[in-house]
Image (cartoon, rainbow, N blue to C red; front, side):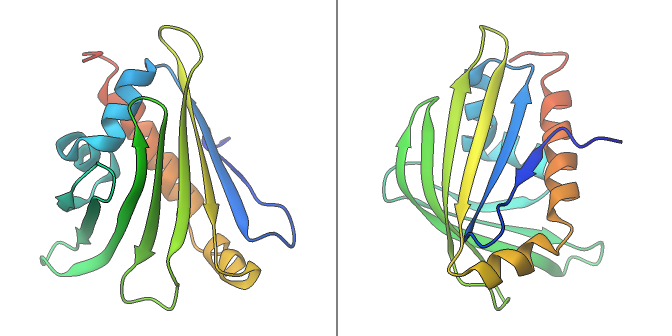
Length: 156
């Protein structure tokens, strides 16, 4: 099955691009990335801090069935423009990976469709390549599919 969220990674570069089109207005797509309750639903993670404003920060964690933390990440919001962009750092805690910088661009395609393009820049090509070996492409596809389905009925 073809993955709807595309990952583009050029050899020898420290960046990747994550691109996905949604059957959602850009306002709903942006809301899904900036409202904690919505973010938790489609990402399947617990938000412990979510200050989506300039100089704000965020933190989330994923728990196993026993309630132990399996994954946690945090970052700082550097810039945010309603329905247009978010610039932030992203750091996976308790891993050898250094922080990354992410440029999220939200684009209105029509009144009912939108697109997100996420450019992630890594400290080195090696760190980027290590990240690409992880099953994150399937994970972001599953999460984005949940995001699309979440609004299917309501179009909040």
